[in-house]
Image 1: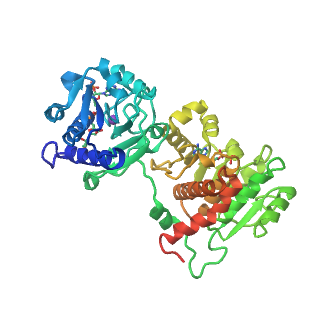
Image 2: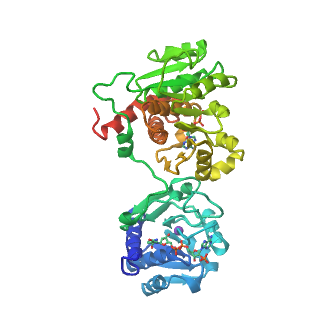
Image 3: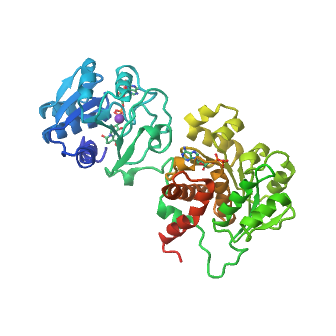
Length: 467
Ligand SMILES: NC(=O)C1=CN([C@@H]2O[C@H](COP(=O)(O)OP(=O)(O)OC[C@H]3O[C@@H](n4cnc5c(N)ncnc54)[C@H](OP(=O)(O)O)[C@@H]3O)[C@@H](O)[C@H]2O)[C@@H](O)CC1
Ligand SMILES: Nc1ncnc2c1ncn2[C@@H]1O[C@H](COP(=O)(O)OP(=O)(O)O)[C@@H](O)[C@H]1O
Ligand SMILES: [K+]
């Protein structure tokens, strides 16, 4: 803002917002459309009023509801009125919304804190009650969500689309706020050279492709990394089969399974390429351990033996009951919300409401990377770096998919990825496998997800031309 004429950034944002509305949402391109602008007192309201003005100039019929008429964005309001826009009282908002084709939610943007109050909350309530048939387009963010955490501290707008400016925001990536954003459209307003290091990042195909291990010409099965899997039990033998399956597709040169004979037999039957032995001490040397999926109770000594090796470790599920007070080597913990709630002694709902906060807190407390699973997978490192996985799908909400993820991420650890990279790359590939599995199986099982991993890895590696 300091380097540009006043209002220039806002005009860039507004131009992008109007383009999305006219090209992607309003079939008529704006002409004849009924637009309702909900405008708060800040610049978010300014964006929405300017957009309303531009749409009115294209032939839309535009109404604006001002939350705080004395403090409304002055230039935006003048432009809106000059273009033929009409200001309606909050009390008449219901009628205007009922006939709208497009609602521009400009109540609150990145300046909002603490959920909507008063008239703003009442307007969000009208939208939630289905009082408009129009598309709800949030300007920058759905009003009322917390911009930087993905939390929804109170009433908020639930949008069909969000047009966001300059850079992504945590609220657009992390549930529950992200669930309120609908389809997200990014508008570049030229901020990139001036932005600081991001507080969190979202990987894309090319990032993941660059991180995936690439077997060199002179690699052998040991140099590619050997992963040990301490998982499964008489009660949950399938967890061992699925975790070993995930591990076999994550690039490690060998998978060693440690567990009871009966389970090892099932593992070998499904995966003859896996090596098996009864315990971590006897199964042979590894470069990383995946510990815990379906392990059940009473294997504390085995867990301790695997942890004592001082190698990079992934700890999942039942293994999370035997954590040391702090890790001093590379560690990746993969709890779901219920498991993290137990670790932190809070309610599960609290973890789901504040995913970023709780993942960060656990990462600090255990000095480990924490991959919190669920509708948004958040991977938080103790040094403060956070990655949010963009590929998740509720198709993964099926028993055993977590075991596949644990094996896959452990394999990447053995391939010498850092816990942050291993966790975020595994979550990314796992999400894509879930999507592919849903496309072919409808309601995929964990086995279906596992079966798609090779195609996912092949296509990601193809993205960098790997052989
Ligand atoms: N930065 C950029 O480069 C660009 C930014 N741009 C745009 O600016 C937006 C940010 O604008 P902003 O900073 O004026 O804040 P904004 O989101 O309008 O909210 C502040 C107002 O809300 C009020 N308020 C707060 N909490 C509330 C609550 N819970 N319930 C009710 N009211 C509440 C608060 O009142 P106060 O607390 O001060 O009394 C104040 O009046 C950004 O999201 C983007 O759209 C673009 O133009 C492109 C360039
Ligand atoms: N609603 C959802 N949206 C996206 N992913 C989900 C959802 N629910 C669960 N998942 C994913 O499914 C997997 C389930 O793992 P987990 O809870 O450990 O199950 P299990 O122990 O049965 O394998 C995780 O990768 C998690 O992120
Ligand atoms: K908004």
